[in-house]
Every structure is written in structure tokens, then in C-alpha cells.
Length: 195
Image (cartoon, rainbow, N blue to C red; front, side, top):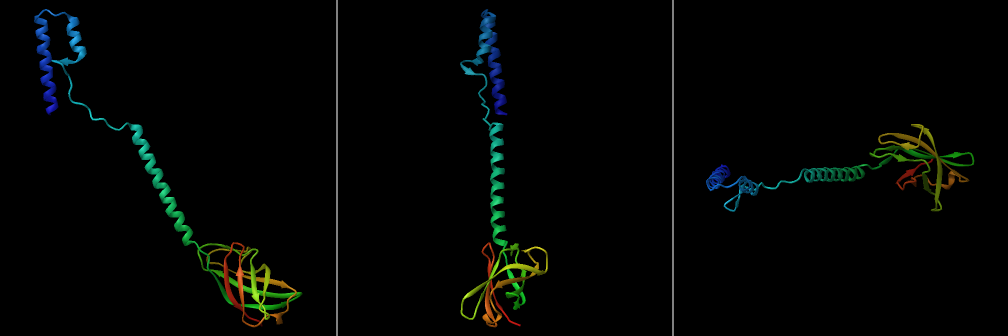
């Protein structure tokens, strides 16, 4: 409101200046010069300055940067939480048992994955403690029941048989400790029995 009154005052002053110049017999070039300069008594015509706003491109850049930062933060939070929550938890169902087999000893065991991540049992090894306190490796797992792949998904179970060549059933005590070790480093221990 005050700015409008000031503009009106300046317009009146300019009109008076033009009238005086016209009374003195001023020619059009002088009037044009006064109008082109936009000056009235040495002051600019408009004293109200527009407040400088942010250019639109700067606003767009700030918004894009904020969105990118939010997406990166959300991805970081999601990925670290997902990694910490997804774990393998193998449990042994029933009693793992050693059996005589042609040319060696067979170990039958059923695993259930109670965790939230899948585990690959292909290439896994079970070490069983013998009577002479050495660990004997049972390798080459074969599926007995529970699926057609050695990748054990969360919540599933599978019965496997492992084999060791050249060993005898009498080499192992009843209740011997055994440790499963997968290729990706997961380990679990359990006791085995003899029939």
C-alpha cells in the first residue's frame, strides 16, 4: 500500500515536471530524455526493488538432490536390515545315524532350515569324530527325501546321506560328535548314533 502511494506521488511529480518544461517551451527531445532516464529530481522512478527469488533451475536441483539423498538413505537402511535379519538356522530332525555301506560307512541325517535365508548343502562335508579322536570327513551328500535340490529354503527340510570310503562302523563310538560345514562357511554340530 505504501509503495503504491509512493508511485502515485512520483507520477504526480513527473507530471508537474513535464508541465513546467512544456511552459518553458521545452522541445520533445528534452521530454523524451526525462522519460527515458526515468528520473524525477534525480531520483529513480521506482524505488521499490523486487526481492530476488531463487531461479527455477536451482529449485529443481535442490529437489532432485533431496530425493536422491532420501532414496540412498532408504536403500542403506533396507539393505543393512535385510542382511542382519536373513540368517540360516539349521536344526537336525530325528537322530542322525551311521550305517554300514558297501566299501565304507554311510551317515543319514535330516536337516530343517528354521532360519530366514536359504542354505546350499551341495559340497557340504560332515566331520565325525572317530574312536581314535580324529575327524573323518563324510562327503558327497545325496538326497534321500524332501526335495530334488540341495538348496534348503527357509522353512523346508531335507534328508541326506553322506558317505566315507574305507571306514568301518566300528571306527566310530555311539554318540560321536559330528559337525556339518557348508561351502559358504556355515557350521552346526550334533551327535550321531549307531544302529
